[in-house]
Image (cartoon, rainbow over all chains, first blue to last red):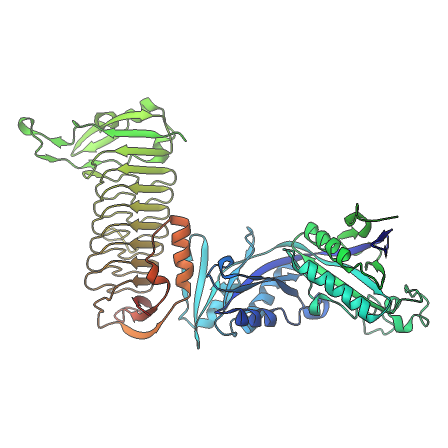
Length: 300
Length: 284
């Protein structure tokens, strides 16, 4: 099956249940909101080595935030519910509270909540002040620049991590251009993030290694520079570069929709094939089939 | 929406009328006028509800003409300044009073809404646990306070007074918000434990006396007690959240100038633990 002349492989992305939270960071201006956001979601590409996956969902206008200041909406995902509290406490405490003029609010209104601000308040050394407005409690923590305002509780819900597709291009320029178009399109959607740098993975992995001390290693079947050396290469002769887009979202639907949007935008001249990463379907909790999410858009 | 209407009779048992002329009014204890009670009863049962006028027991129908149907939504028409405890302890529903009410209106309520299109007596919302009270006129003393001998006053809920308030506003309050658009008397926030008081008009003497924690926000300069310390002039970002919450959820008018400028931050009362704060707005 093809889409705009690009082969869409009949396969699926194997995705996993994760737990998601949304953090809204605001600041006096866009510059400091972006600075805090960038730091907060830094080094959060893969759950395996980073302990959390995170990304910028979208930038917010002053009229879209609780305190009427410019802000950023960030999504965070962990494998275990319990680790979210620890990860958010560390990240907000070290990267948002330390950034000039910032405040931090819950952006996910679910019944289940974790007390992130309730943990960070102790930084106030007894001078912190609680404010309860209807059912939302805030903490005012005195800091050197003034006050840091943080909501006590942040919502948490089941989401999906590891939605993905691979873009196989004739060369690195075509693959990068396609991946950038896909990222730009997915960025316009709510409830999803792409946790890797610029939304793109250039060094995907497989879950095995010749070395006993490693659980994962470079994705040899999709490495173009060794396609003649490996027996199980998935690349054709004309394939010159492969980039992957990984998508985490607050629901299976959000991830599926984002994959579909991303793939449609990645189908440009110079792209040979779009496929997806999976482990045979035995490890994940959701298998997202490319032909299903693109139904109606594909040609024979 | 169904509604129960109670219209005060011109001639009712609370009136003291020697020789046919009204010389005064007996206090009426009217805690049975509550949505929790009226919603569960038939009209004839509502008519039989007991109200005390002085030492004597009367029935609700002796005071009011009853219209409409049993409901959690009660409309009362009449000058009820001698009626006490209206809506006291209510947990849900709505009471609208087209007139004034007496003492203890909405005291110890934990949910629902009371709106008084007139004035109220003392102890409005005293020890309330939740809900919303709006007074379009003026109120007496001890709004949201603790009763004599009790340690804590209101604990959650919002009281909005569009007119003026008396003394000891929010005395010993533990949580919740009180907003006064007009002036208020002496000792506002006295012995306050936590919560927020917004004073958009001028306040009397000894504001915040013996407060432990909590926040008093004043649009006008206050005569500060010597047991408070000045810290800084700044714009506290949390006020944007607070004002938005009052404006959007309760339709409360916030003076536009308070969204900008500076606030002098005083902390005290140092005769207590000194963790209360008074924020006084200053033009920027």
